[in-house]
Image (cartoon, rainbow, N blue to C red; front, top):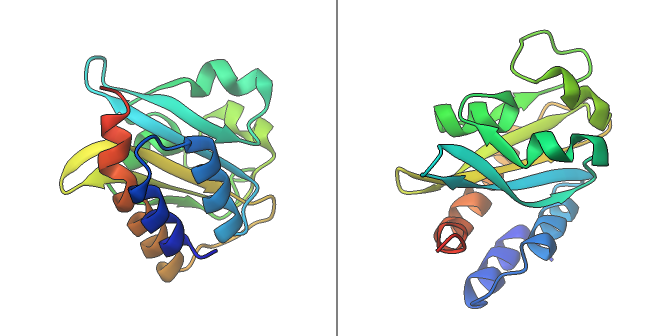
Length: 156
């Protein structure tokens, strides 16, 4: 199933199973780890909606992420994709030290936007160093846009 098909089918479903959605995205991008966060306007944090492959020890950290913190927080703050070819060797300071416990190397997080309105973030990762192509970044942004309204509505 292609990602575009997943988005179309997802829009048709009133109550989305976010875990199934995330697993489908990971399969479409040949990734093994991922997170989907919803933006909570009350405390300006990203709240975990679904995850795959995140170690249990990191769950308290990824449950609620402040704007600008870590890869997901940076994508939310800049409203642009944030990529790391190898999270394990990255020295930029964007990824938090605990993120290395995932063993993920190539990672990409994108904002989930409804127009200019931030609804959350979608992140994917590979266990090998990897530079995501411009096309892959654009495609993940499109997937994120396709579910933005439903993600925002899931908090109501």
